[in-house]
Image (cartoon, rainbow, N blue to C red; front, side, top):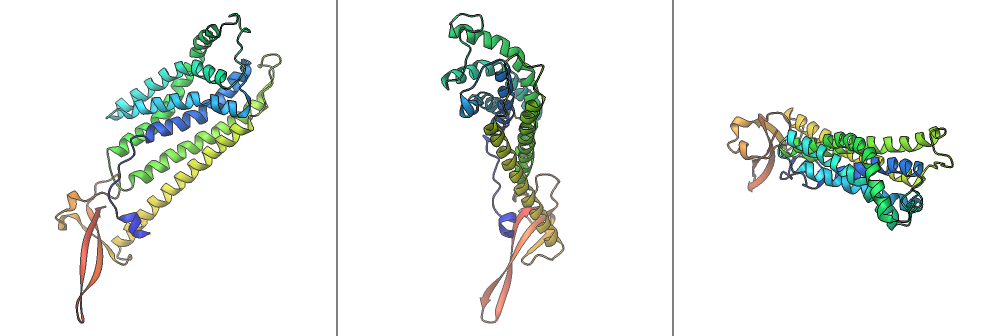
Length: 299
């Protein structure tokens, strides 16, 4: 276990990680909002699976915004691209949602919203009205997405063995918070429904979506916990090696190791002034043995 924490090459963060996280976050946040907006406007998804399918609209568009944000090479550029991407994506959310609603057999209000029986007319109306509703949400979602894409940009600029653990902690905590907030939102809307809803509208808790949001929260929490435990274990192992309490390992001054600048880093932050060394005893003949020291990483 100790060798798995302390040894091995640097592995850069996957380039798709930011887009994937934004997609999951967008799905977890956007689908509960759609569930209430569609119900209040009498656009009814075709059952629980229909609602989950309709939620792909904010999920896919959020992933596109995250992908765009990840193209930036500087933090300021990442923030700008993510915000712009989320805002532009929000403008396409309403028509894409309506198309998915139609494809999955939901109630699309064709012939019931003053546009005759034209599907194109309803789609245009939905696009125009939806843009006004979605744009503020796009800005809000973009602000949340930038937290993840910016953190990944900073970690990508500081490659180290702990970078993946920190990414798991940050994105996992964010995912857990978003999933829990989505569950709370769905239950709160059900409790608060009443005079502000249209006549005849009745919001039922979409328990399938609640289960999905709760699962997202749990998975995010487990990912954060795993990253935290690995980061803690790595730091504790180095501290023990520094005190001489970890058999087979030692920490020496970086100036005494010629290849120190070329070694991988254990920790993403801080300026490494030491080198972690693995010591092994080898047999050199009858009644003789020697110790070999291998420089492992900067710490």
